[in-house]
Length: 303
View 1 (tube, one colour):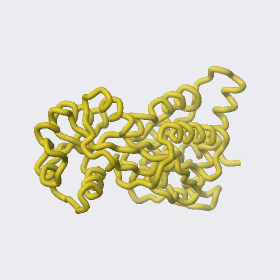
View 2: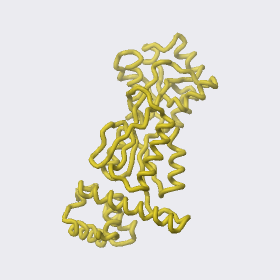
View 3: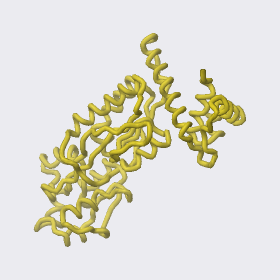
View 4: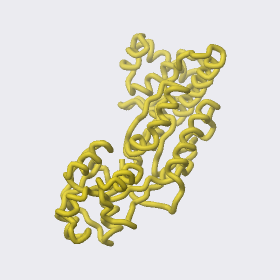
């Protein structure tokens, strides 16, 4: 039987990437934290942590971390059955892209927080969320990668569809004769951040050439990006779920009908999930498939 105090300490060290900070979080000394992890490694006969800063779990450490999380989730489920209304004790982190959080994932997150665990939503570029999963920072993630890391599964949940839009006034001033390559190159685009390659993909798809340099604003929030477009600061790509109602209301114009960009999303989760975590994965995938639907394979990347 593994020692739960040692497991809890090991998990805290992985979470904080530091013995001193983990010890402070557990209200113990750094020496005590180090001894607990060392004793756990000795009992298992395996090295669980790479001591090069920042501290990261080894492959064996990742397996132990998943075991500990499984035990905690099962414990929470038991407590909710035995003592209805008891508060969750396990913190669960999930990684999602910002556009999903701003559109369909928000209600899912609120339901998870209400029903299951103390939830942390980690927002990152969907091409990088898988790194957080591999490190053990999160227990599930939305990603553009079709292949998952060892011990995890990737399941298709649909596509995010993006439309290139601007306000009627901006279109009249900058794209009066339609969207040409020359106009696009001298007109300011609104992007999410420097990792956002979605606009490059759109321009290449629309005009058949790779465009590397054009005027850009960066607004690293889906709401801020949309507001910038509505304020006539530029044109840009917006999730169809956000753009559609605004186009119908006449506040935005679709600049390139038929040239929407679609990106495939996959939910990555443990291959062998304890029942509480499996229910969470099922809820996320059901909501994603209901909101995103299933269409032809897409392309592009966006945070």
